[in-house]
Amino acid sequence: MTAAPTLAEIDLPNPEPQADTPGLPRAAAGVAAAALATAALAACGGGGGDAAGPDSGSAGSPDANPQTATPPTDAQAARFLAQAGFAASTADIASVKSLGYAGWLDQQFAAPRTQSHYDWLSAKGYAVDAYRNSLAGVDATLWRKLIGSPDQLRQRVVLALSEIFVVSMNGLPVSWPGLATGAYVDMLEANCFGSFRALLEGVTLSPAMGVYLAMRGNRKEDPKTGRQPDENYAREVMQLFTIGLSMLNADGTPQLSNGKTTDTYALSQITELARVFTGWDFDTAAPNGADPSYMQRPMVNTASRFSTGVKHVLDVTVPDSADGPAAMKIALDTLAAHPNVGPFIGRQLIQRLVCSSPSPAYVQRIAAVFADNGKGQRGDLRAVIRAILLDPEARQPSTAPGGGKLREPIVRLVQWARTVGMSSPGDLWAIGDTSNAATRLGQSPLRSGSVFNFFRPGYVPPNSQLGANAVTAPEFQLCNESTVAGYLNFMQGLIGNGIGDMKADYTADLAVAADANALVQRQALLMTGGGLADATITAIATAVGSIKADTDAGKLNRVKAAWLLLLAAPDYQVQK
Image 1 (cartoon, rainbow, N blue to C red):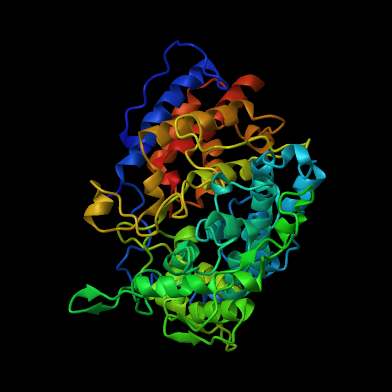
Image 2 (tube, helix red, strand yellow):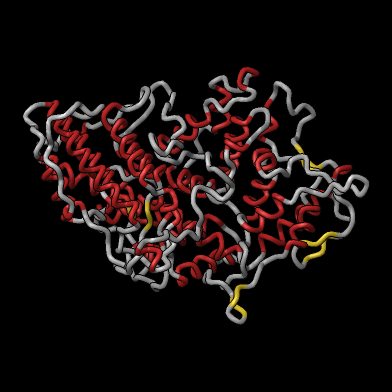
């Protein structure tokens, strides 16, 4: 696969007199037009030939032991921070260089959680009857933590988990959907550094998941009416949350028999498992009452609605003596212990944090840590996350074609917002729903269109060089003409005007704005960790330098134009 054209290979139009572009001066509007043309390249499936491809082995590392490595350069520290969090401030870079990769992770693992989503929504008055059927405030609290919470490793992992164990607030036809969503993300926060088994139980018994995948209120079979238990959660907990559709080798490749994959389960096993997931409901006698606090509590089992008799979970028998909670425990223990879970979930976490097409060797190393953290513990998510981020393939980008990952739109926005110090003095966080592809990002936290997330982990872009090389690139499933233009137009407005009471702090940029090259170099370091090609930096600096900087207004125009061009560049959008 060849790399996508860089910005330097595209003819930048000379700024022509035209109507003012909101948020940017007239001269910079021409630059914005160039940026739009550049961003369109991302939809072609190119870019980013610098990281590990699907068949590459361990890429090696400047330090023989990444576990104890200290990054020698600002660029290496910034690149690490883009994987382990969202953004790299100068203070963050200094911290990584001082503590080392592992030391910084230890600090982040120990960071206290900030105010929960549920508590914030309650404090803002959304737990009152007027908001019983409303999602008001949910987008605000999600952006609040993604952009403003100092525990950025936790927030990055929670975002990743929310895209694996999907609940969408758009699919919660129940009272208190906003508080249910907030409580679900709080549950992910509480379990993201713990055991996979505890996380799986938290997901399964979450009121939000109970509503979203129809396990809440699921009842035993009734021969008189022909009613059968709902199979929705039983199917998805296997297909999406634990073992996947096909038996896997430890390196994540499918096990083949006579050239064909082997199914992990049959329809009859879904039917059997569905009987285990009966009798569960909200922990309240008044689900439509004025107190929504039950949305924070795990669901409870009602014995009269639980399916009796012997059941089977894959090849494990659930005895007829097991009540609802006991049957649930056997089911979740069985699924969590399945050999597929390590490579299946480990590969997806690598995809969300490091690269879209990890090598089988990378997946196998992570699956081994999932199986045993070195202390005999299985499913230690903290150990898994540490191993993903400290692996040689994460720390040293490969030169294999098809490497890296397209930064999903949410991550691009959050990275930029954190880098420019965006905050909300009034604690309003007014970014809102960014799902509209034509005018915003085409993606918004906890607003997936289905349980299959915004993009599939096995997605291979068709009619592209990535597709021709069978390179999985999930985020490209969101990338089309509408989202390319919508993203850039939305970011242009944020760069120029902010939104609500959220404004960018350009103080550090303005200090070097008189030197266009220094300005672009600074922004490129923080956003790409050395991943922006010299030709791209030169092209952006040349365009930005055409804007006069002999006044404060001119310097500000330069800063805004530089940010817009950088965010549009394909070799920024591909995280290497």
